[in-house]
Length: 163
Image (spheres, rainbow, N blue to C red):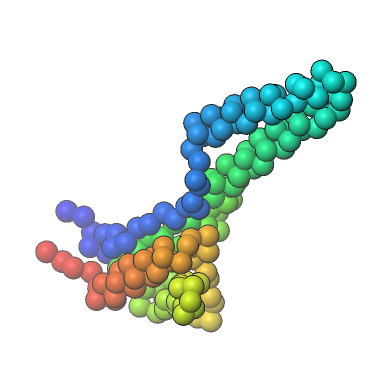
């Protein structure tokens, strides 16, 4: 039988949205490079070869920008809530971890809502410390996160359930 105090009430992994999978990226780059080649060939044959070279630099620049974006996509945040503790961790793209631990009875969830744009910010507040969570999420995702986490915090404040 598992310990009621160790039972997870809520667990979430928040990741930035990426619109392109690695396979789609590969296809996009191939099509883009082929298109660049088609446009560069006439310039090359007319003797304006520097234009073709700069078009190749465009393709290299686009490739590097996407690689940087995919590297940044490795960053994420985790939330783990038990009846005794709320653990919030930010994990960077290089694996560096920053962690905060809160007592669920004393942590407060703050939600900043703009009437036109929706939820702008969700933060955990405890002992005068304010930590923003899910800053990279969209307004609807932030609102859903706040709703779910608020329900889970209420559940955690009721204490562990035995039997």
